[in-house]
Image (cartoon, rainbow, N blue to C red):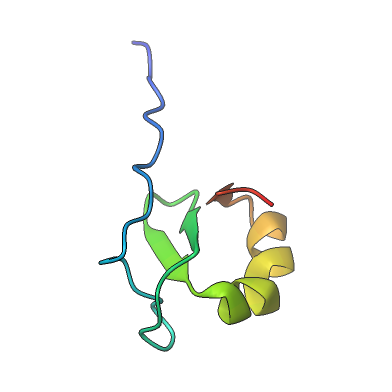
Length: 61
């Protein structure tokens, strides 16, 4: 069996931060299969821990 990784779709103006509801600027795809979206502020707060947990971040900056 082969697995294919599908890139996450680009963020749109309709995507919202899961913490505060502001416009999302970061999508974190978790190793468990879920995803979280964060505004710029919450992305800066949580980026280090998300990377440590193995989450794929896009856009990755």
